[in-house]
Amino acid sequence: MKFYLIFLIIFIIIGYFLCEAHLKLYNVKDPKEVVIDEISGQFIAMLGCVQSEKSTYIFLSLLLSFVLFRFFDITKIGPIKRFENLPNGIGIMADDIVAGLFALVTQAAILTSLNQTIYIKTLWN
Image 1 (cartoon, one colour):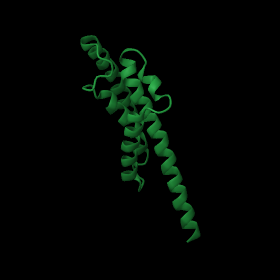
Image 2 (cartoon, rainbow, N blue to C red):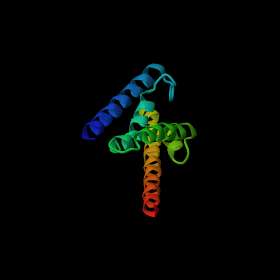
Image 3 (tube, rainbow, N blue to C red):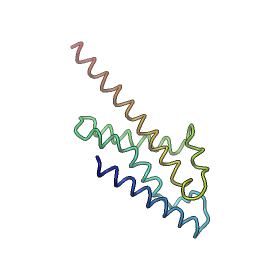
Image 4 (tube, rainbow, N blue to C red):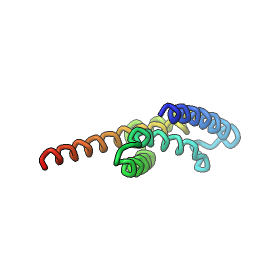
């Protein structure tokens, strides 16, 4: 887990500088050809998968992290849209990072409630 977090932080920092460089070269806000922001957000959403690596829910966890991240990234509900409007490379990276955090929290809530439901059902059997 520690390695994953260190990798993630370094990846986000590199992504920020690459987005800054792209903006200086092309002056395009949130360019479609830049995907390091999407990858960073997906890595954040997958933090829950790293935590549940010994769980029977690993496939469900991976699927949820992908679907939820894409949902929050595309819809940009809540404060996610505001982060997209931040200036420079921060704006390119921040909305996807926040979408990844939303996906992570939602995934954790779903898996926790699912785990509780399964536990309660086994008590009644």
